[in-house]
Amino acid sequence: MGLGRNEELHVSCDYKGREDDCPKDCSRCAVSIKTDGDVALSVNQLNDAIRQYKRAIFLEPTFAEAWCNLASAYGMKSEYHNALLAFNRAIAIDSQYGKAMYGKAVTLRNLGMLDDSIKVVYDILQIYQSTEAEQLKAELMKAGAKINVPSVNREVLQDSLRYCCSDILRSNQLLLDDGSAPIVEEIYQPEEFAKSVLAYCKKKYAAFGEQKIRSECIITSFYGAICATIFFYRDKAGMSATTNYSYLNEHIDIEFADVNAERLLGTKAGEEKAEGIWNLITPFIEYSHDIFRREWELSDELILEAMKNAYKIGMLVAVHDQTIINQQTLGQTVAGTNILSDVIDNASVNENTGGYRIVKSIRKKRTKGVPADYFFPGDNNNPSGVLKILSPLTIDCEKAVKDGIEGKNSWDPTLCKLIAENEKYTFYNYGCFEDSSGGVNIRKSNSNPKDVVFFGKARTYSCIFHNHLVQVDSSVHSGHQYLWIRHIDTGVEQIFPWFEPDDGSTISAFIKDYVQDMRLDSAEDKLIISVSRKPCSFVNAENEENPWYNIECTYSLVVSCENDRFIGRAIFDSEKTIIVFE
Image (cartoon, rainbow, N blue to C red; front, side):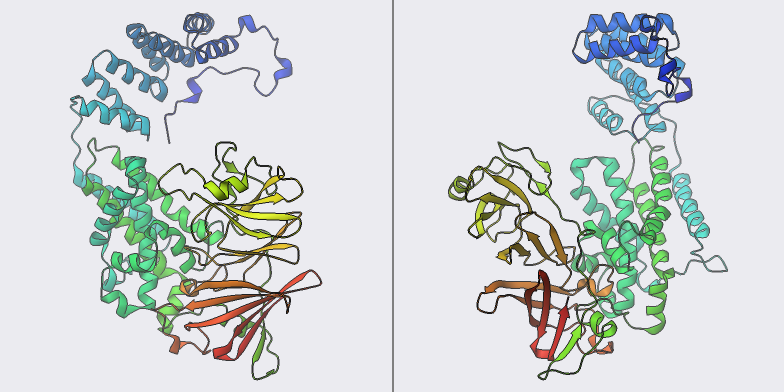
């Protein structure tokens, strides 16, 4: 939230939105004069800034922002008593002026009045969620500051969290007609799960501050409960053999519990259903932070109470989801959009050819809607940031291949590798790992070595095929596998969802394809990609109608280009089936 203020109590320009009516008499305009003071303050011309702020206050005595900035100028001159007087004047105008309150706390600390300073910090944290105030509080307490805060009954605060949880469940119709909560008794482990998540978040987000830790604790408890509930309906034996947290830790990345929960519910970020779920838990997160601020030295006990209630909300969201209700009723898993199951269930099937079943897929190529991740980490000659394809770079690729790239951190990739070339261009993976993954693509003109441009994200396997750079990763973590095809001159990209599950899948999202190799067959004018499929261990394939669902196998994806149109054929020799992607 940060530090705020009551805007109704602050001076603003009378001509905002109708600047043409302004008389332009800046010498009599307090707002204009205060702005001149801000400019002087920004370049450390403190005496000039003080003079301008005093002129603005003379014209508008209730100009709280001018009083606050005057105090800041005095503070920068180490005139702390004058600064304290000015901050007090600003707070007298707006008693919830966060910037002035924080400035007063810092000034009191600088005057050695630690107990008075921490009292002001306490007042700030009763109103605002402020990382600055939290950090100042920690510094003051470490320095020995003491405060007598009003005693708060922790049980009352815990009850408040439970009441808020009940209100959310009731208002979203997640309770039964008799008002009871339809929890799943077999896996209802709120306390154990909350303690494990708390330990994880404290370690994972330690560098981001207490507020970040608290938020992630609640979010992970909520979405983690959704995941655990759905997994229970799909693998009761597996869930019964361990704890919720241990099971999730083996099957998903806890950090991305929200993404996995959305996927299991058949939705994704940005879609109406996903937004509805987030909007359901947001009021509880905000209310929890309000409760946390009432306990001066926040205890794990209060955070755990919030997490247990978030866990309960998450479980009931999953229990009431129609997809999960269907699974519970049927006692089996609902099929997702596996590369085989979706095309066989939904596509037209031709007559057998050469002993193989030929199936035409319904999947279509994409040009947007898939995260391209075009981030360039930068080096000594180029700024880092999100770049457009074909953005010029100053890079000596040959030197980088020979000497490597100096990493900024211990985990930085430091290699530069040549990955593909033809008569016109040479392509490099710049800033990559040993296996060529990571980093970015660089395109260098062979006729002009200084013509070096950014060419997107690097991937493990690359080759030039029909005037396009074709790329694929060996595997993908917490996402979907795609074939990326980019025109070597224009950079125009096509994205083909020809592997594993497609977006919007549910259980099939845990069935993964691993690319073993990609090679160019010049004689046949085709690309051949060797793929290994790993099934999802907790799905019972015998319950599925078609025999190709969730199998462990290898297959070849053969890519051809016909009249500038790319076609893929996934050949499953073990199943005598060919999936055709057009």
